[in-house]
Image (cartoon, rainbow, N blue to C red; front, top):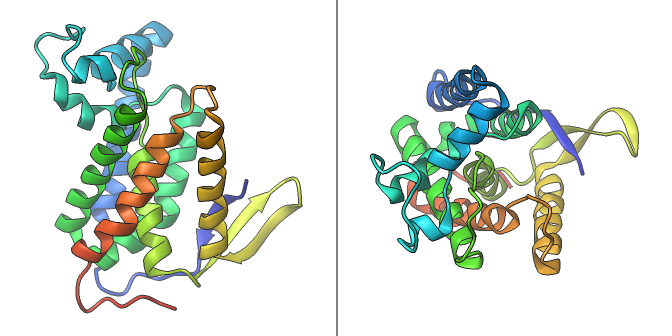
Length: 225
């Protein structure tokens, strides 16, 4: 799998992507605060604020009675299992999010990001309706950003790293990098892979982003290629 490092796509319609960087900073801050309690603190947060399908479906009582069960469809996307889980999601958001915010505008991008995360969570719930395990991580919402980027900027060069091929960055078109990522998600989802990765949340997120970008983007922003 390719690891994106940066792209050649400059923002053109906004001065600064402060919403994207704000989401990134908030997500990192949430992780740091929860990490103060050690592994036990992280696991407690996952159970209380992660999206548990049987809880959202009101089949069992939630672990946090003061919190509406359905609100975890929002809160789950700000939680992460460990530093590397956080780093991978934030790297993708850093590379692709600023240009999507540039195409949508600040407020629309915020709503778009959260909605992609909710729809990704619902996709996971649909395919895992009886699960007691909490869904956590920004990957569903970030997948929505990637889906939008694929629609808007398919031919932009993305510099990626893959230690199986070369040890230095190579430039590839965004459509290739993101399409390969999507194929991997579909492959493991079709296999019913059970390894702690929410494959259907990723697929739901990228599909949501690819569709919603047509609704949320500024009319003056055209697809590049």
